[in-house]
Length: 378
Image (cartoon, rainbow, N blue to C red; front, side, top):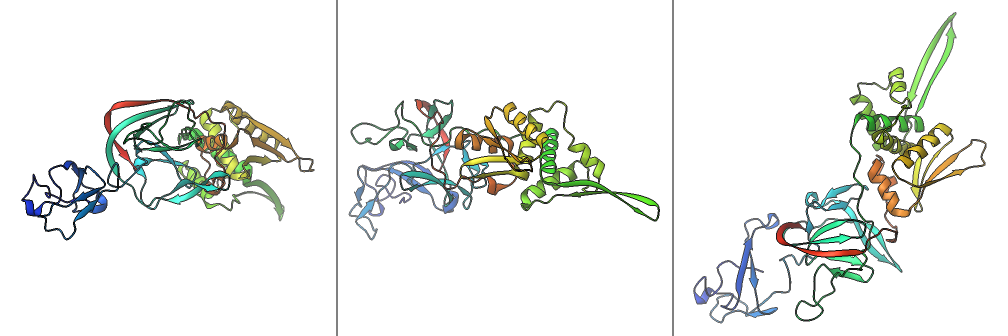
């Protein structure tokens, strides 16, 4: 709790709340408390006696927090990506109250991912530290920030003894999590063509039929996208519309979904997103893409290999010739797939309930003081 101009040095003795031994270190305003100014006070103890001459109706103040006035312990640089409930990422500085993100909960012997809601979000300025991990991830945080490690929660900085004693990161500690997130695909023309190729070939009914009527042959074309998920339908409709193609223009659609002679990375990412929306699944910790079309299976494996994924092809004994391409590498690779290709259907991207255990190289390599203060978000 902070009061303006209530120190012995700033006002008369009878109005003072803080004595001469307490020092106001800074003042700040927050959008959450408009019209109120906060004062940070360097107090000697948790309990502080109000000067006897003060007109305040209490004799003591309580200062229960170390750090900022919100008692925050998770201050990070604003550019830090946060995993949202829809499986995509957003910068920490861009989060808002009410957003759904992934947190963790203890469940038996494991800690698991769970959806949670942002209840508060604020900005502060703190000395910055860079935490570098074995896989090359760099995290810029305050010294008060806590990371979940193999030995529990640890602050970025701390001491073995004295007033600053607390658990803190040391080289060799291993963080729990997924490691760095992959960059999303570019919304390019090739990506869109690849997506339409995947979703139309994987799920749409695209055919031609003829019939004769009074000695005249009529040739008809039919296109129907039978997805139950509106997210994928809306994306396909938007991509076709932006390309100047109506869903009744059969030849134009055929041209868009033609197999390219030399598919690039953008087309490959779009194709995998489209075919996953059409015929993919992710349940029980296993991501699969299934099809009875050998050409589709060939393209799926070729695109996965191009983007550095490992996989296995499972062949069914069914007369239909169904084949499944199964992604290998655990949850880290599933997340990399989702972020790299960006399928439209959110429900297929869920990791809620999954245990936090993976093969990511998340050992702490170094913790460096940057020597500057930076805006941090909590």
